[in-house]
Length: 283
Image (cartoon, rainbow, N blue to C red; front, side, top):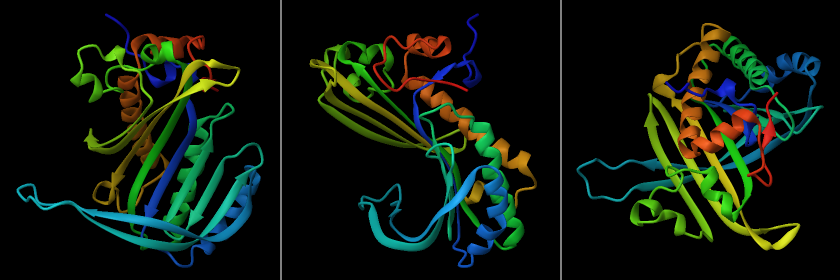
């Protein structure tokens, strides 16, 4: 029986960015949390570099009744909030503390250890709930953005049928498709976790050989749980870590479904012959 490949088996990845994010109802005195976190973050190599007011456009979609023929109703609002930015002294990783969110933008251009950043993220959340007793969490998740550049001949070696669904389902020989540009978004629930999966393909040419056609490919997977599935209060770091890890496990399964078995084996071995750019060694 063939062994199931797990995240820990991979020696390489395709990640350009990983984002950990917690959303909560607005807290206007969030600077009190920033003050409490500052010394600890400084000791970890994160320094407060910016404080500003951000404008974020929110799209709220009201789902119609299943039996209704009405269209989706979309409401657009602009949210302004104070945001504090802690910048890593080692790379482009940033921890953002806002009035309604805590966001960890993790730079993956160099080797990184996700478990290390998850612990810092958990510490910030636990401190926030201790400081603000009535904090109400609305969304918790992890997002991974995979990005590679490959030669035209390697596109179907790297990515499988799931990645090309819709176009492939309509044609007898999917590998005859020469993409110029493709973009798709799937929203679904899997294992009681919500997912937004964006797939993007853009035709271009290799920088060192303009006669060689190539593709820039992005697989962006955002997994999260909503307010009704988030504990009113996290008991400890382990509970919070377990929730994020479970989402990450499902996210990895979705990733595996979008790449080929052959390319999965390449990521286990750390082979990069079929990728022009974007494949990196795990820590």
